[in-house]
Structure formats: C-alpha cells, structure tokens
Image 1 (tube, rainbow, N blue to C red):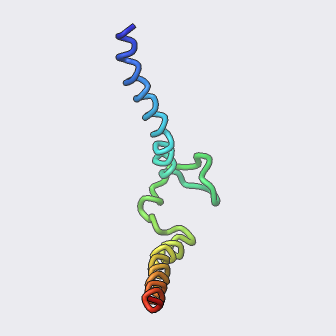
Image 2: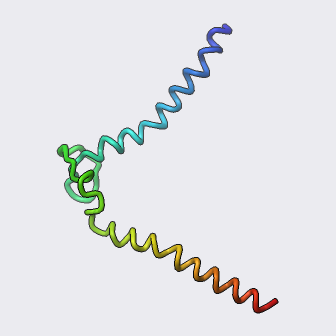
Image 3: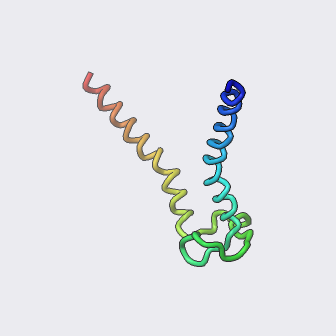
Length: 89
C-alpha cells in the first residue's frame, strides 16, 4: 500500500501537467495551419505564413499601437490627479 501512495503523487502530477499543457500544444500545432476565413478551428493546409509574417494580420498593427498608447494615457491621468491632490494639501 505504501508503494502505491509513493507512486500516486508523481503519477497524478504528470497527468495534471500533461492536461495543462494540452492547450499549448494545440496552439503550437494550429500556428502552422493556413486558416480559411477568420477562425482557425479546422485544419486546412500546412503553412509557415504565420511564422514568416507574424504582424501581417488585419487590425493587429492598430491593436499593438493602442496597447502601447494606453499606459501613456493612463499614466498622464495619474500624474494630473497627483498634481491636483498636491494642490489641495
């Protein structure tokens, strides 16, 4: 019985980590797919386009620019709020 308990924890650990890594493996496999349309649910054709041109997707450039601007916008608001609070004191 003690041998079963000694092997149970490593076995369950391997199973749990394997279960958690399945979505990552699926994403890696589907990154080599050439999607037809907007969604990438079914395998269509092997392609390396996504790896050779990672930023060549419509709307991705705008999203990245907005993502870079957001901290600057919110940081400016924080600085302005801090100045107003300093004036109140």
